[in-house]
Image (tube, rainbow, N blue to C red; front, side):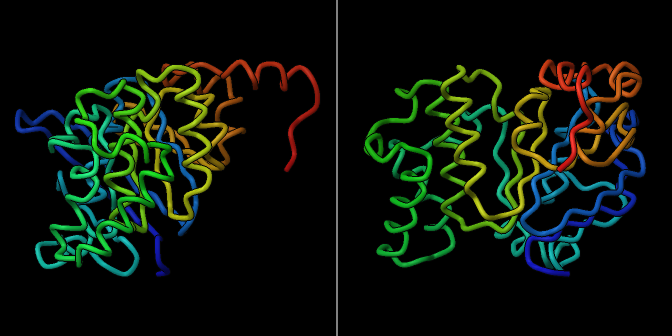
Length: 251
């Protein structure tokens, strides 16, 4: 398998109370691809995302590139997979934005010149270079979201996994985030119920419903499918409703 490839094979996960959260989920993602993980609340999106870097481990197999997730490969896999949580306060805990973004590279023992280079580059990418010395709790929610993204970008991951990246963002923050994510060359896996955002960023999607894969394929086809949307508690995005009136959309 190539760099940035992700393969999820028959992954199932039960909560401690025995309630199944994921059932036999399989997914093949090619390096550099942008894939949306869609579904209503409780569909299993966050649970699935936390399997990509071994935060949660059920049954089945998770491959990142050629590495099978397990005890021996866990650290290597976490170096390849950057997970950005829905709530940036779960990710930002240092006295300054700079220190938060430097935390990962420093933990890996990189020399301070390389740490500084990565922090400056990552903050530049998310448009927060000017905020480096500020305490994270002084940032707006949109800025915090971008700072949390920078903490992962500084690790030079091959796979970027984002949980509800647009929740709480204003339209401008959302546009800026979209622009940043489009530029990042790594594999992007985005769980969201912001379907317009998914449409703008992703070429392919997987729809989860009750912890199972309900559908998978080109994102426009899935999201334009009324029956599928209704069945899985989602809605056809407005932008596709208008397209549906006119001509089918071809790439």
